[in-house]
Image (cartoon, rainbow, N blue to C red; front, top):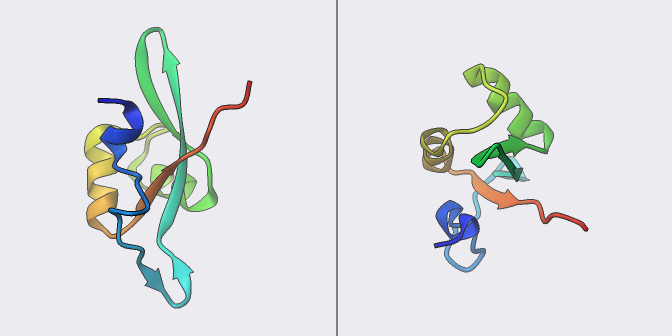
Length: 80
C-alpha cells in the first residue's frame, strides 16, 4: 500500500465538506527523514492545525483525527 493510499486522498471516495463556502481541505507534503516518513503541512490551515497540536509534522493518528473532523487531506506532488 502506498503512502497516498494510506492517506485515502482519492477525490472519488472522499466527501467534500464546505463550511461557509470554504472547502475543508488541507495540503501536506511527504518527506523521508533518515528512513522515517514525515508529513509536513503546506497550506495555511494545515500549518495552523500543526501549531494547534504543537507539532511540526503530522502523525498517522493526527491525520486520522483531522479526517474525522471532516477535512480532506491532499498530498502535494514532488517536483524533480
